Image 1: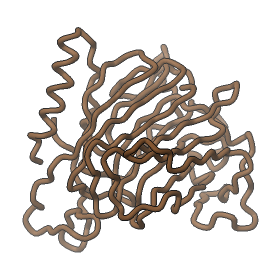
Image 2: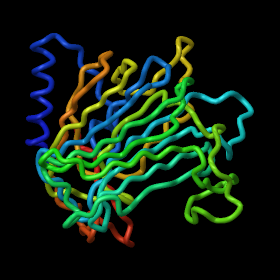
Image 3: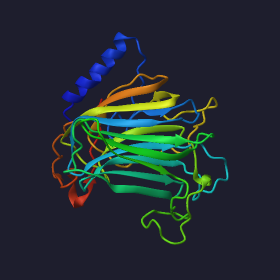
Image 4: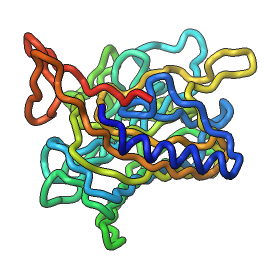
Length: 316
């Protein structure tokens, strides 16, 4: 990929850290791009009062829109926990614009095997197209109970003038769930699916924020902005999931999202801190390899036999 624009931002971040003697967090093995961003955690304790905001400083343009994914993992579960049932081990809280010209929001929780719940609004805020304009902000805020469990989320859309377009607070308790045995939420509301109880609830021990294409992936043609992370508990930034003193992972899964894009993220200090601001941008893609072509609407390269080749993260 043509990384001239990306390299400038990355250099700026590194230079700032050098100037003020701030420890830079190590870069993830997959690079700071697409579905590989930093892992945020709280020393194997639940992250409390978390909110993430994505602010566009340049129109984010993609043929299918944009997906803002707060991908988080719950604490390790005790032996004998049913693989198909609650509590949740992987939690997704999402906003974006996808296919149709509407800002949307979505919550999806998963067990070790199968999906536990899915709820959202694909028509949250009407838009003139699937572009997220410069000046717009999408914000996701999570709520915790006294044990640190996530009990709900609030989704906020703000326009370029700072006006609140719409807000939605969605509590998890009582949501129509999915089938318990290898369940999928393809038919929410189907009779026989249990409703969410407190048994589904779990804290978040680690998370990452990914800016990707909806439904698989896509190539953005332009875009830039900042991601702001805030929590009432301290957060540290790392290139790996947190481990306890005995070296064991203190998360139930190291799953990451499958969606991808040609987004990249700027380096951050390791913390700890209650707030971080991370610039992001769009890397220009290289031409498709010989024998492959870009397909609409994803603009991904497709090889012989129609096999989709996902966009590769920038090489640092």
